[in-house]
Image (cartoon, rainbow over all chains, first blue to last red; front, top):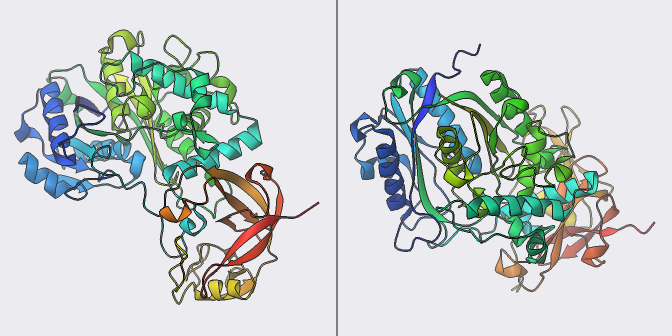
Length: 381
Length: 137
């Protein structure tokens, strides 16, 4: 058995209001989330000795970093850092928290995120890259990377835009059951098809939201977790994998490192795809969910299109995906909320969107130009 | 003065030979003297063997469309007049892939797998941008 399996638990989760929160800043939203997670856990602020963060998309006062965050929270950590892996960062921070707790470098690690991307002025309009960057040819935006993947998936496997639309529809349906979600009005595949092109073959409804908000997750040892306020959610499996090669790698577009990260997490947890009750798959764009379904072994390579049809990925289906609405409909918090939702499902706190008897959840994250991938297997303690 | 409003390459000692070659109508990439790997993006060191020895060698200019997308919004003001415009990830015959545009044909006439060849588009006195056009079959 893997020596770190189930050694740590998620003991507290918290999120601020999401969506458009005018008058807030990345730091104020972070503190709001931290207070809620702390209250959720039953820990005292003085007990938080590890602090991790990520910069986010925008902030009037500059990118969020551990010093500014520590100053604002009044915490002098023993273990800290700012990590920058885009949408893969939340999962990576959680894994670093587990390593730090096991190494005795910290007892209770909080990762805290805040962003004011919706009202603070995003950085999405900047030209990307440097020197001989692809922006010379007009290749810009996160949407472009996923559009490249979607176009290739369609050409190689016959995947259709309507099948991508099924993912948007499922996420929106789940968001309609989540009072904290930003976009709650149900949509149909026809709505998806009628939404405008952003970067073809991606429609507007293939794209995640741009949101203000804050999220905090607190990790402690499994032993400590037993004495705290909530039923612990054990961190059973962890995996990370990267490709630093974009153009230089034949299958970059297919992000095969995602598979490596999931297999490592499965192996550490001693589980496989059949053991997973509910999944939270990183969905910056709908196509990302398809890649995760294939790489995590829920279907074969190329078969995610048909897999997403017929309500299979909706609540009540075989494999409910992104039960809070995901980045597509709940809120875009770089994937932090995927971890929060997995915890709430495993605690049984999800009300009308609760997956019955949920005991094991897979959570995935991916960031940068498809480069960074990670996976977590979480288990009801 | 040029009124070209799109992003331009920042010319450096490392990438100047690539852009000079484009200006002269040649697509030229670095071939590693240590392991013969043909590389792109431009780099002082070979990502395979880390050798700093290389030669600029001329590519055939023939490629295939590896993936292909159409921008319906401009993320940079310079492209506002161009939407919808295409960007292709092209696979060069010699191995490397590069982002570029497919020109001389409507956006909906380009498909993944299409054979294309390089053409050169002088946009400023200093910079000529390589793009690709379909090879008629």
